[in-house]
Length: 116
Length: 110
Image (tube, rainbow over all chains, first blue to last red):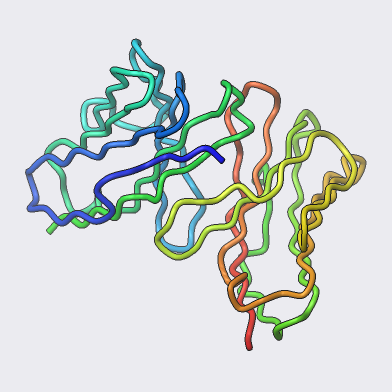
């Protein structure tokens, strides 16, 4: 099956600093990747859709200047949480589609961000 | 009303039991129905993928879709402690983003 690698799996940072999370499709090319946020015991909340070579599309209510997304290649998308604050602490998960089919999403292992 | 409703549980069953997990939805345009399994602090893993109505079986897992009732189910036979996880249903209209349920926590006791 398709493998999506996400790093780091856990990061702790001080308030005001920026954190970058990487998402790679290891054995396939992903023209589209998605970034989700998940709170404890809650479902996945789509933050943005990342398309290779173009600007990301953000969901309503997601600050694009705080959550910078770059999709520079067909196998790599990054999410940078800028000037992180404690309320940004959450579990962030990326996913990629196989064959451009949004119905078949393959997820990374997630990144737990804790902002002190 | 949420587009997709899923009982959060937790659902506790003894090892070997048949587990039934369900979701209801309100958007009759949904065509694709998926079940994901998520272990604690891990990304979801695609378990079952179904297009339109009907049944699909894969090993111990069976997915059912009843579009007339807007109801989908996932059955797990001979449940094992390793099946303990959160199960998320998801659905979409072709080409559109997935809509997830809140997830049901399943605990299989040995």
